Length: 438
Image (cartoon, rainbow, N blue to C red; front, top):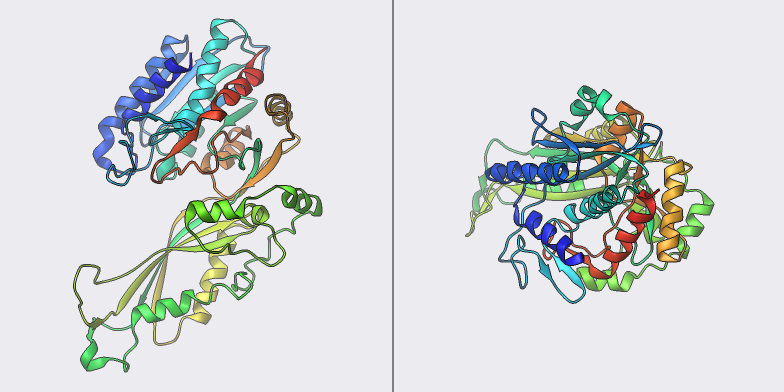
């Protein structure tokens, strides 16, 4: 049976549904049609919804009005992939190795939502499905889900539900997890200017300010020697991590040496007396993701740059707000940027951080199913990533999210050789069966 499932995944992976590249709009339409047909073939009433960015695939199957209704959310869009960088196979051709399956989208997010979807199809056929199901598959998650809120508002009456199941994250090593919080936040662009134009380094070297030097000087002041952010009031709304959570997090066997080997890093940065899991899930961070100046080609311009740009990614935690963080950062810039430097700050994407209700009935039901399948306690994980739809679901629909990550931590989502551990696949089908059945 798994062979037939692989065939479906193979067909999905082959469709290059890259939402960040306008040249792949034909593939976006093609995969929406494919998924819509698959739902129809399994007795769902369906609609391909246009007008909200890339098409959304909406499907409904009703068992009984007396049963709870769930939304199954997933996204069919993927990131770009350079076939010259992948080791032994084309990223858009599913490759089955001894321990892993490889292909763009197998982890993020095609195989994760497909495992649930295929299980639901089986339970419909055997008349053992315990939920009425709404399937919502979007094609703009990798570009920030800019239109999903308007869609949920306009289709609110069609999306009345008890909860939403989302699998779009990672487990910790071999430990089954439920995500109960997301760091989320802000993308910003900082531009500094030091002169009207670039100036010859032979004539003006060391007597005029250099935009790259100034940018480096400014950004180097973001963190202190204890890896804490130096912006005043940045931590003002950050709640203290509860003692019991700290104890649980420290009990998780984090293989930092394997992490360092897998990523070729030589150290791990974290705050004093904070374990790695708490640091990446419950502590905010600011990361510089891109720096540039005018000359980026080959050769040497030998001119002092007058302009420099930096892209800055903020990951904030619950109780912090994007508004307050932006305000604090702007005030910090006003006191940090030297008088001889002009700057501008542009804010791109803002999403609020999320914590979900851990006492939700469906979360507890999922926990019992996970324990039965894995034979070990389930870890409630505060994730370092983020999904815009989680906060929007609660605000617009009053629908709680149940966040069950399926993929291995070293899946390389967005990266080279994106993969899914074969050993996990049967367990996840078993979990889905336990969770969805009557």
